[in-house]
Length: 102
Image (cartoon, rainbow, N blue to C red; front, side, top):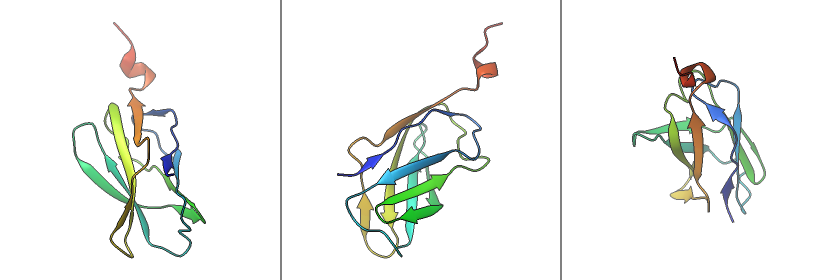
């Protein structure tokens, strides 16, 4: 079973992490995260860390730039494998000041 852990993300978040757990040992592999934005644009990011069966990515400035439902999966760059989670969606919301009604 593969899963991407959901978190509370907002547009512009920096330094927040998203872990992805698989049933396979990924130690020593070149693992990338593939994120599909609500607009359909895909971005590819190197895993920030890998610990046996869990890869983690820590978002940097410019990553979380769209409100809505995102999808994520892992790609093993050492082979033709993609890890698709059972639940691959997570939600990015607007910053609280963007939600204010004037």
